[in-house]
Amino acid sequence: MLTNIVLSDIVLSGIVVVGILQMAWFSVMLLRRGAPASVIQQAIPPFLTIWVLMWPVYVDVRWLGMGLLALLTLTVLALMLKSPFWLHLRIAWDAQMPTIKEDMHPRITLLPQLHLLIAIFIAGAWFQAIPEFGFGLGLCLCVAFPAAYWADRFSRRYGFLVLKFPAHPEQTLAGHLVLMVACTILLCWSLHVYHGTDWQLLFIAALIASAAASVARALVPGQWNGPAAMISVGLVMWAL
Image (tube, rainbow, N blue to C red; front, side, top):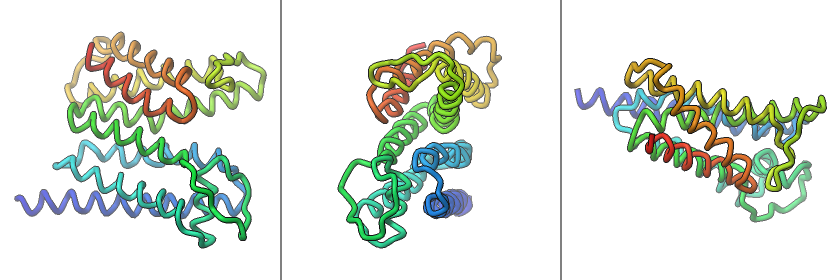
């Protein structure tokens, strides 16, 4: 029995690591075919949703560290290595390097991917402490935040209301509404999965937590709004 339990976690971790390696390869191939780095970066969290949906299947949640280690390893290699593949991966994951130049030397900067890694680590820590909270947080990070980004992009294109927050002047009312609706649904579903609780009883608490995510996304500068949202939403759910 113990062997089967350990084996299942090992197999899951192997699938996750292979998937993350494929994600890096896809990022480079998309960049070489002209996809903007910002679009590639926004495609990464939805790709990781597959991994987050596996979280409840783990017997020993410490095996989540294998996925985090794979992401961290790729980020460090993209920072340090100078071969074309790793340079292109760095460009794909760093909005400050928008073009491909084979002879350029990588600059040592903090990639946006590190902020995502920190946010996932926080969600994973919540999952180890309170699984139903961490599972919902991971889904919010990988689904709701990218959905809000695309809602913002669509809204700006068609002239809808731009909120012009000092830290994020590009965010729109539609983006924040999409974020709150998606977070509310995902948090309710996560609690329902673990406890079978009626969604109507969870709605108010999830809506308040979603508002905390919206505030963190609007007020915390740069890519740090993702980790800040994971902390604030988790604390609000815990308090409620």
